[in-house]
Length: 113
Image 1 (spheres, helix red, strand yellow):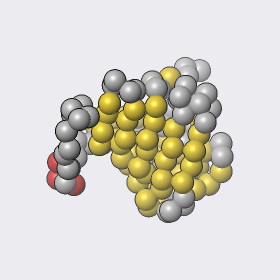
Image 2 (spheres, helix red, strand yellow):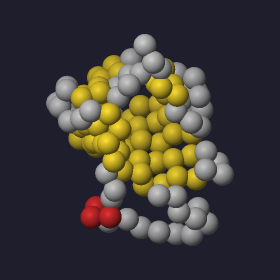
Image 3 (cartoon, helix red, strand yellow):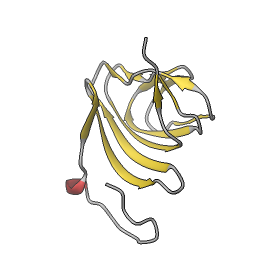
Image 4 (cartoon, rainbow, N blue to C red):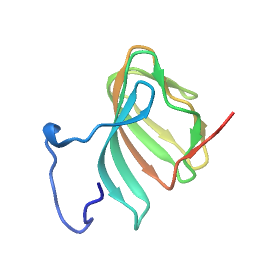
């Protein structure tokens, strides 16, 4: 859901709308501003799950809340902050499951093999 970026709002855990992204991966959008092409979401990965290989043309950042994320930059546990610069490609996975706060700019492009 996109809310008016000029208005304040708050979400409680009960209000999160978890949607499937890929097998074992769900996302809950927290904020989206299409005028600035910016977004923020929670990403929840089941043990052994992964997201498809993709690129964020304008970059992406994430903060690992719990669990572990593995991608081309390494293995990242709770409290880790990861920055992917514009144009970087990655394929995150989680061996034990994870909850991650993600921010991004631009439109995601998924690579098909």
